[in-house]
Image (cartoon, rainbow, N blue to C red; front, side, top):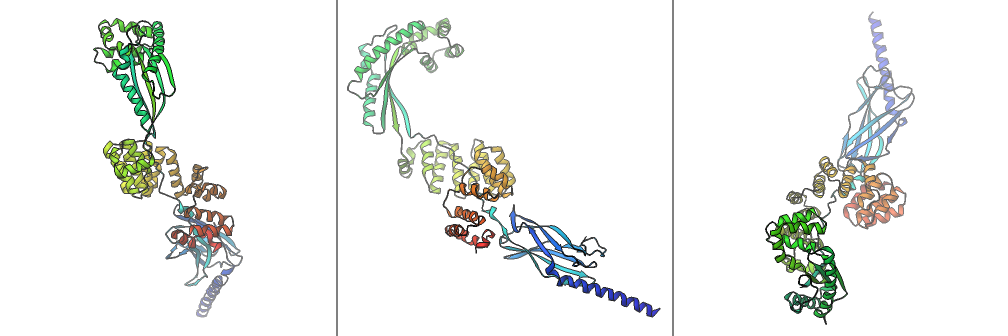
Length: 545
């Protein structure tokens, strides 16, 4: 019995020794194992690195009694990242790992790493270990893929918040006028009317226009009216007659003065003037008169209804109606407002003379960020200008002062779509993409759509971003097209000759295999030291180093 036991023990040890020996050959034959990766060059998408690794074990390689431990490792400058090992077992191993046939088999696994700075220059390898009994053998390290493409990280995340426009008018339309009055049912011009203060002021205004280099006389008008009492037809004829006598009177009072082209017009019953004078008067029940005017458009009905208010009509006959029996002499003038150069000089020497619109325009012309913010603060304080408060926030964003910009936007009173977009940009800069997306969707403006495209790029939704920015120009528009492999559209979108745009041009050239263009654009981009350093690590240029 003892000799049989010794024989069995020796037999078991012999089988184990044979098994271990065969398992050891798995390490020796590791070069026969083929490894591929999809994608061949690793890519970072939304801060994540994902790929599929396929390992093909040839016929006769995987020992039925062996266990294989495979660990994906991403090696990069500054460290390494290691995944939990994948475990495989031979056909005769009684465990819960994935079985691999000794006749050969391909296994596929998803690998995943969180991106950390430095991984743009990386190498994905597989570390293997064969286990048999209490023994183990390290397999040679298998290289899987090189580099991590981080091109999407070039996206400009400053955000687009347009300034609110000012209403500054470079040319102001002005008028100067005088008038003559007529007696009831008369078209005769009394001599005293030609020497009235109103006519003297009009003559002086014509002289001042000629002397003022900022003013240009566009033309003059003679406009005759009749008061809205006595019948529409009668008043139309009376107004026509007044236009003729007023034209002659105009020639007398403007003799020797520049008047430009003069037009003569007859209005007829002056209901517009009537309504204006009533509104400005202290007549009792004037609200009743205004209500009649709003209720009826027919002149005859208006006149009849107003005459029915007997006490009121008596007051109208003595105060309002005489003022409407007139002819107006009007000079139409264009006034040249402050030029851009004058505004810039005034903000340095005497900004207090500028009104709200001029101050907003001046701030838009100033290039120095600190001075621009100062002018917007001044407009906000002096004129309680909501546009100035908003534009102050935009100026602070442009200066990179996100926290200060957020405070400025918080002081804006009008909660409109532009402000909503601005709050989205604040969230974007604070890397709160979910909140940013909510604001951009709510804003629904063209600028917010462009900003949402930035969020889409950061989230790896390249097709969506490319569609939003399709046909637009600018860095992000070009980048989106590169990310969906549309180099021609990307090239069209690039209009700037700045280093960063030239870096994108170098990427486009690299993907098209144009080595000469790669060298040319990288040289131009290299004027920015950060881009020059990036190019040294960028997997986009690995074939051109």
